[in-house]
Amino acid sequence: MARIVCIPRSLPATRLAAAARRAVRINPANAEQSRPVERTPIGRRGGPRRLSVVIGRRWPASGVRLSVQFLDNPPADLRARILRHMNAWDKTSNVVFTETRGTGKVRIARLNSPPDMAGYWSWVGTEILEIAEAEPTMNLEGFTMSVSDAEFRRVIRHEAGHTLGFDHEHMRGALVKKIDRDKAFAFFDRTQGWTRKEVEAQVLTPLSERSIMGTAEADPLSIMCYQIPGAITKNGKPIVGGKDINPTDFSFAASVYPKRVAATRRRR
Ligand SMILES: [Zn+2]
Image (cartoon, rainbow, N blue to C red; front, side, top):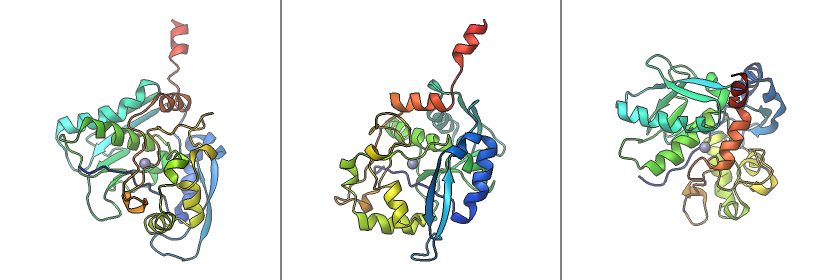
C-alpha cells in the first residue's frame, strides 16, 4: 500500500450554522472555540464566497460512547482490529467505541470511488450527526488484514481522533516549506471549496504560530498532524506526520474527555 494521507472534510458553508447549533447543544464549550472561514461552494472555483464561523465539535466532557457500524461487512477479525485501534484513545480518556449491527453513529466504509468519497477521512466530532444515515462518516479505502500494524496505528487512530472532535494539528515550519503553495490553493479549492485565506490558515500556517491542541509547546509529532498528499508538495512526496498517539495527544485527549478515575477511587 502506498503511503496514505488523510483528506480533511468540511461541511459546506450553507450547513455550518445548523451544525454549530447542534454542537453547542451537545457541549456548550464548543461555542468558545471559533474561527471564521471563507468558502466558495465546492467545485466552483472563484464563485461567490461565504463567510461563516466554524466552532468546536467536541462531544460532552462527561465522556464519549459511540456505536460503530461497518457498511461493507468486513470479516470479524478486521472489524475487531479496527475497533481496537480506535479504542486506543481510551488509555487516558473516557472514550468507548462499540460495534453495532444496527445503524451506528460512526459508519465506516472502504470506498475507492467516487473520487470525493475515496481515500482516508472522517467527519469531525459532532459533525458525524449531520451526515445522512446511509452515508459513511469515515472512509478507510483498501484497509484489510494484510495492512501493516504501523499503518493501522497511524491511520485508524488519526481518523478516530477526528471522530472524537480533534482537528488537524498544524505542521512545523520546515514541513510547511515543502508545500507548493499554488498547488495547495488549487487542491483545497477543488476538494474543499477553501479560499486562499482558508488554505493559509489551515495548511500554510506553521505550528509555532497556532496550536489546535492548545498545548503550551507545539507538538510536531502529534497523531493529528496535517497530512499532505504528494500532489501538492514541491518534491512530490507526501507528508504523513505523527506515527501514533503520542504522550501530548494522550494528555490532550485526557483533558477533553477526562476519565475521573481519581474521583471514583476517593469514594471507595
Ligand atoms: Zn485527518
